Structure formats: C-alpha cells, structure tokens
Length: 579
Image 1 (cartoon, rainbow, N blue to C red):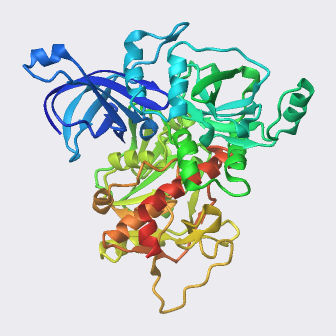
Image 2 (tube, rainbow, N blue to C red):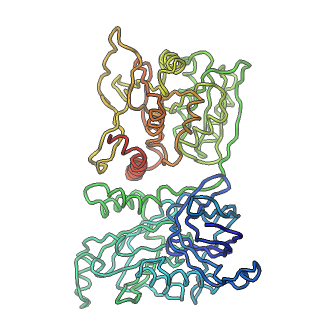
Image 3 (spheres, rainbow, N blue to C red):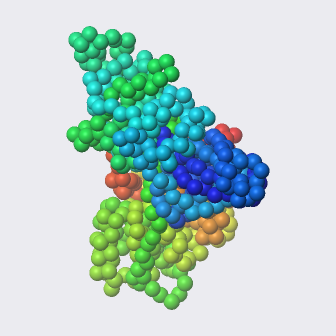
C-alpha cells in the first residue's frame, strides 16, 4: 500500500466490530489497524472488510482523477480486549501489506448513539455501507440493520433472562428462549455494540419452559429452551438485550431481556455455568475459551501505569542483590518479611511493591512507623493501581539498583540464606540463566523442587507446569552430588536472575493474567536463548503457597484464568515442548 495522504474521520463499535471511516489518496487498501493507549498498551487487528466510496471533495483537493478515495473498514474488537477503545488518548496506525505503518494519528472512538429512531445518520451510513458488503455474517447483518433502523421490542412471554454478570468488560448471560435449540437466534445489546448468534449460544434442557409452553398451546420443537452465552466489551449503558429470530432472511424480534438488578449473578456462578454449558464435564475447548472467556478475563483498564517511590533506608554502598517482593492482599505477611531480613546475604536491598490499593495505607504506615528498625536498604513502591504480577515486578526492577535480581513472593520464609549465596555464584559463573530454590511447606514436605512441563488431559492435552514430588519428603542431596542441578523450569515465587539477562529476555510477559505461567514462560525464553535453568537444593526456605492468589478471585475465576494463561503459554511453546 502506498499513500500520498490519508485521514481517518470517525470510528464506532457495532456488533463486535470497529467500523472506521476515512479517506486516502494512494494505492491499495489498509491491511491492519493498530491502536495504542497513552501508557503504551497496544492492540492490533486485521482489516476484515474495506469498502471504497466516492469523495469528490478530497479528489478535487488533491487533483486526483478517481473519486473513490473514501473508505470504510471493519475490524474485530476482540484483539483490543485489554484497551479502553473510548479513551481520548488513543493513537491509531494504519498498516500496509508489508506490515509497515502508512498513516498514524490521534484518535477517539465515538460511542454509538441509539435513539428512538435508531442510529443518527452521521453514524448510520458507514455501518450500512459496510454491512451491505459482508463485514457481518448474514444473520448478524440483518440484526444490525434492524437495530440501526430503530427496531425495538419489550419483554414478552417467549424469552426470559434468569441471570447476568459483568465479567471484565463484558457479560455472561443465561435464561431461556422458546425452542432456542431449533431457532436461528441473534442476541443484540440495546447499545448495538455486542452481538451473539446461535453458533455461539449454548442451549440446554429446560423442561419447565416446555411445560409452560404446552399449557399455552405453543408449538414445542425441542426440550432445549435454556441458553447461555457471553458478550464481550459491552457498553456500561446497556440495560436490555434484544432477542431476534432469523426467519427466511428477515430478523423478527422475539422479546427483550431486561438486565434488572434482581437478576445479577456472581462472577463465580456465571463462570461455573459457562464451563458447564460449553465444556460439559471438562473444560471448554481452547478455541471456545479464547472466543468467549478471553475478552472477558483479559480485559483490563488502560489507565497509565503510575507509582510512588519511598526510600525508607539507604546506604552509600551499591547493593549486590535486589529482592523484589510484590505485596497483594495478606498485608500481615510484611511483618514476617521484615523479621526475616537478617537471613539474607550482605549487600542485599529490599524493594516492596504494594500492588493492592486496599492495603496501601497499612503498608505505608507499618513501614514508616518502623523505619528505625530497618537496617538494610529498603524501598517501598506504591502502585497507582492493581497491575498484576508481571507489571508489579517490572516496576520493582525499575527502582532497584543491584546487578542481581531475586523475585520473591510475600509468603516465602527464609531460615537459611546460604542458598542465595550459592545461586549468586552460579549466575556469576554463567552456569545458568535463572536459578530457583527448593521450597518446603511448614511440615517439611516439598512445595517446589523444580518444575516439569507435561501434557495435561484436563487441559485438552496442553502442556502445563507440574511440581514433581510435591507434598512428599525431599530427597537428601548425597555427598558428592552438586547442590545446584539443571531443571526445565522454576517457580517465580523464588527466582534469581542477573539484571542484564532479565532485560535481554524482556522480563515477565504482562500478557499473562494475574500470576500464572509467567515464570515458566521466562524460563523457556532463557533456555531458548542458550542459558539453562538451575535449582539450588540446599533447602532452608519455606513457601506457604498462593496466599495472595486465593484472594484474587474464587475457584472458578482462578481456574478460568489459569486455563487462559495455559492456552497463551502453549500458543508460544507447544511446538518446542512437543519436539
């Protein structure tokens, strides 16, 4: 694609697509659209449809003979799940066939304005134009046309919404539609931004609905009247869902589903119902999980990442080891960490990163009240929000000063710091790229003795991290055996790495959600870069395990996040591990 000049006039979200109108003087059509927030988050989506139209004003201005310099393009919004599309500080970049940037400008997506007569003309025409040229599947296209032209309906006896739950930026909804399994159904939000058709709606048996239909004398084609589906990135203004039946090429309204407060469901229950409907007795297939749960669970605020640095204790000598400890929930663990500082080798500095706004005040006051008792170099970082494991650690690295980094969970207790000295020597000698540690439970059984990556039947044969020997007594290290051995991977709960190698690898991947698989991914990148993973087996360290993660959501939420992270990990490493 070659461009002499280009401009993007407007953009709206409709039925899960970003519809952008603009013009260009040049050759070729856009291939992809990239959006970047003010704090550097990026999403990129391929152009699914591009329609040219006449723009005589632009053609005359540039002396262009052809009039079709205007264009409307459509892209799926799912690749932008982690971005706030309506943020004013977006930068939009148009990419050509070679992946090169052909145009870039500041951009703001407008909210679709839906009134009594439908969508206003200035927003309607780009939607109509691209709708007529195949951006949407036929049933969805007809539903969109019905919506933008002002179609509406109230609640009827043919549909009902039992429950709805906001998850991330979207919804999980469940209810019943008469003969749901035998109808071609489309569910559309009243703000027209999100849609699901029958292929993405799970149906299940609802004999109670069938009995009610029978009493009314309605035709019963199936016992499966119950339905469950997800809607990604739904406008907060949405209060109703329209249910349409696609009959012979026309969209016929069946009824509206009112999102009333008395039908709000818990996220836990909604996720459990989602797994039951889409996975049966097992987890949903990876493709289903990515399509439905991915946009909900990976969506996060695109607000700028900010933090405050408080130097509590400083010394003139540069530190050799920086211990970075993110603090999330369980703030009382800070008391044990402080009491444990003397177990670390000389030349250690501590970086506490408070990543939970609920505990900022406690952490700040607790440490400042005890400044006179802190003898090691200590820094407190107060994050502007809950940024998660990867970003919290990256912020900690940014304020640390030592050439060696130790990433440590807040629920680790060190009785003997000799293993840290051994690990530092292993890294100095270049034997390993990352070194982990044997960790014990409080009853002296193994919590961690290195990780292996094996296929898991419960994860659809995807590779997942396992802890061999977990819960068993540790095998003693015989005399003459090396204290540090090579292992496939180690846990991020206690992991040492040289700063320069960490920076070369790019740190923990923030694309993983809330603390799962980032450690295995970093280990895989280290091995791929030619530096193996070591494990110090001298003991002297205990891990209470997942003391903060258990407070980041219930079991269903944690399982869903772990599974999504597993899918991401396998997308990157499945071929290497299978080989």
